Image (cartoon, rainbow, N blue to C red; front, top):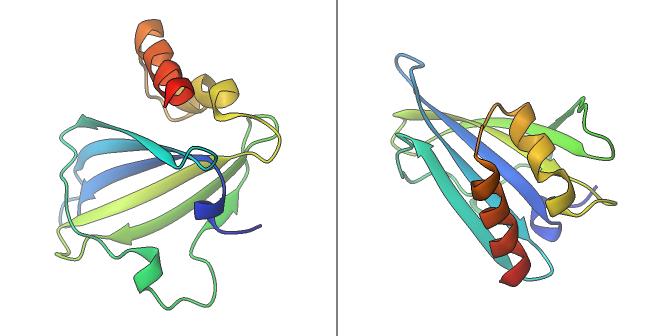
Length: 132
């Protein structure tokens, strides 16, 4: 399977303080390849920080690990890294599908990640995805 940058995906970044492993927040990034757009939403106290970008890394083997996913026709990948300042640890969880549109499995992914949004918030996200 090719790079995440080549496919539409929903990406969760769960952030923790490195020293205490205290949860700080979550960021959701929805990337639509066809439109070249991103939708970003932060929850709780997600701290913006510099981190090692994949294009700057020299890994010959992907750090993403495919893990079982209960959502039909959806692939789930996980990776762990830390901020450049070493203050934060991030668990990256990525969902993608070669057969389903993001709008079709968005609610299932949110439920699996225990992110509870109102129907109105979910419809707003879907509308932004559709209209951008």
